[in-house]
Image 1 (cartoon, one colour):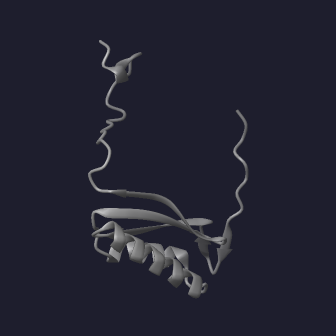
Image 2: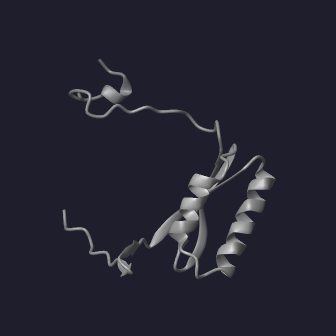
Amino acid sequence: MEQAPTVEVEVSDGRVEPGVVPLVVSGRTPEALNGQLEQLRSFMAQSPELSPVDVGFSLASGRSVFGHRAVLLASAEGVAEVARGAVGEGVLAVLFSGQGSQRLGMGRGAV
């Protein structure tokens, strides 16, 4: 094991600006989601003076959450899509960490 690489962080006006910010978008239908994604990409490209942190916060706290969702990553290089899906896809998993001792094979249901 080695030490993790040093990451340089920009500090301006006492604020820490992360290198990448997740932008959460949702829509009622896949077509509505695509429209929201295109609108957000265009908005971010036309407004480089906006803080991605502020945009991400506004999207996460001030918008309705619908069944079709996507996440964009905003960075200095632009905006890139990283994930897309619909509510109800996949399976639900629950993990209770720190609730006692673990044993070999416990995740497989072995006794």
